[in-house]
Length: 534
Ligand code: SGN
Ligand code: CA
Image 1 (cartoon, rainbow, N blue to C red):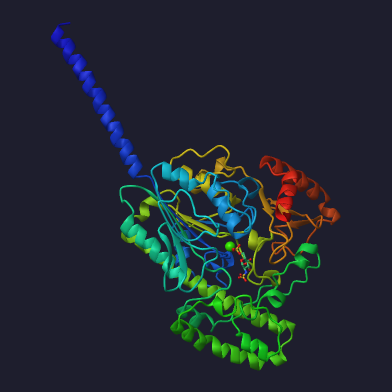
Image 2: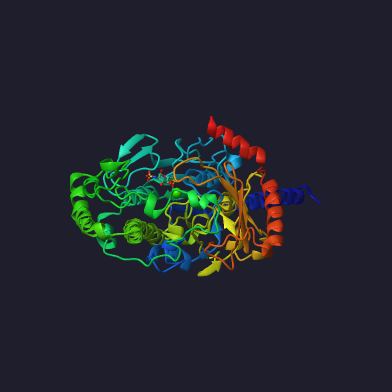
């Protein structure tokens, strides 16, 4: 070979190598810019019974339903601990409460926990959070956040931002959406993928709708749930002593919006912890409010003298649902604004949108409002996901998934390896039709906040598709078993029914194995009781 030929070969192969490298780096760049955006929409206390994709009885939510119509509706999604801040900690860390340490609304969130937004931010995602977090400390791993302090207000809310606090006049659900859209339109870099947490305060208690919707919803009447007058006959102490009954524990003032004067005039003993400050409205806002709620007060004054427990329960239930559902109507409108923006800007195709709640809620089932129990309405949470070209539209998925699974799901969506100590399962195989790899046959639950508001005793348990076993502990030692297929309303606790003896033994065994799998134990139960007592 001549020297010249050799030179050509060497030069030629060098050129090829560099071309290949160039192509490879082009590809990575393309791949990075093609990484899907993630929009995580979560409301606070939004019962699946109040989403028409699940149940058309109470409300029509066309915009939230769009997510299911274009994607997947999960019918068996649950939380691991049915209360606000702990649920959020589980979502962010991908770890159960007993591992991430945020067991109740009262304890501190330990910010040394690694969260999925921190990992995504490091992997090149832009990250932002708007709305309710409820941690008492600021979130880590976000380029921008504007969050409500604690529970936040419905009217003229204050927001905590990286630049200090600011009060924004208006209605919280609209404002949270304005902030979210403003960030998407004006402050993100369109060349980078983003992960956005868009977190509504609504429909949390004390359920203050916007003007448009209190006008509309106070005119409505809703069907009564079958278990509104539940007597808890087969249930243990916990259900009987819980303080979340519509008749006994829902406040005529704060919750049903009677004025302290009305209640005084009728000689009713009522607590009013928040009183006037509940509203935090401007003079004009308050005048519009009073124009609608004033006549409701007058009407109640006429009816009250002839009411009994049962008619009062029904009246309170109707008032409760009118306001609760009224706040959801605004959430639905605003979800529509965000979905429209994605469509209009051609972002929809490369964005996975998730709609969920921090837990479920009782809408009169068992005579209750609030959550906390492992019983169905508060254990189950709505979950709708759309991801064009990945999820086939209009699919219903009945596998048992949990809020524990989000962190790993989002990391997989972004092509990032999840830390080994996260405890969920990525939902990507279910989303993309690869169901064969999904083998979960039980989900774990553990609730801690007791003694506390609503007096729901500590309990843990597991649910399979067929059964649910619950152990209430701390100041009681009681077990309950439900046959989920035969008794979906959970009114027959069959723990002592000899026909179920074998099932009880198997479920207790499985519960123990599940506790071991997730590293929960009696000594941790005790540690968290001691921590609470300090
Ligand atoms: C407030 C509510 C409770 C509710 C908790 C926790 N009372 O304390 O009814 O259970 O929040 O809710 S209120 O009179 O202040 O409205 S959570 O969603 O934040 O966990
Ligand atoms: Ca909540």
